Length: 384
Image (cartoon, rainbow, N blue to C red):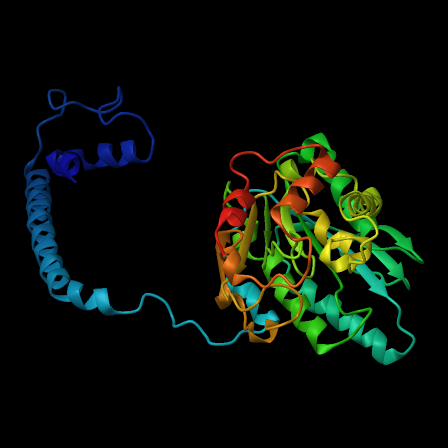
């Protein structure tokens, strides 16, 4: 403002040219005061009018500034108490969710790996699967691309996706292995990946519908898409019991971490070795160890390098289905480094969920001891 007012009114054309990037104010082609010819009477009148207009503009600006300051001083107190955004809604459907997530685009696109199971013998069952796909894919953002699919059972093409392979019989491990291989490619070392699956397409139920929506919203959330450097795996819930896992097994992770994990195609075998080595023939349900079909759920958090982040604020939900009906929508999400709650707030429900078993498993799977900043040291050292 100061530099503008210091210019003479007769120099306005040159100043405008300079502001448009046409060179300095006094270029070689611009006449200096010494070289300007004498002005005749009409020119003098025009010059006087121009100068008068400039003076009026200066004083006018001063008046406007004073008026603005007066109004601002009166209304600033009122503005402090006015809401700056609409009140948060008490409920939210999955279809409405994407409109809340458009302002925090991550720096890079995020590849999505989708495990689809279809075994529909009736039109009603096929419609149910179609609704699941529409629901989950309806929450993808423009940066969730490309989308890679492994389909199992019946073939079911999904537009705008890349079908990696169709299988008559398979498990989630085929999709997890493609994700793992993707993260081993040199160009993807700094990438993030999302894992989703069609939860409820095999066993339709209201509980599976709720768990699927809960996990899909978290894995595709803005918080997970922009997870801080303190996280390398992000999910709606990180549960340390009965083994470290994201209940429902949908999440987002950084490839720089995923590349350290064991081959998922061999992970069920690896967990059998863990079970045989640590507890022998003692009968324990595989869900307590993350073994057999539960190995897919345990895999992403199986390494001591994991830095889990958790979204769901309700401490009443730990893992499984119990208390999950209380989940409403993304207003229940707030990212923190996991575990979200101290050990005393968690239900264990299984044997062999202690610190010694966790350390033994790390030794068997990865021949490693956790680093000093491992999440489990503080968690298990807490007195209960």
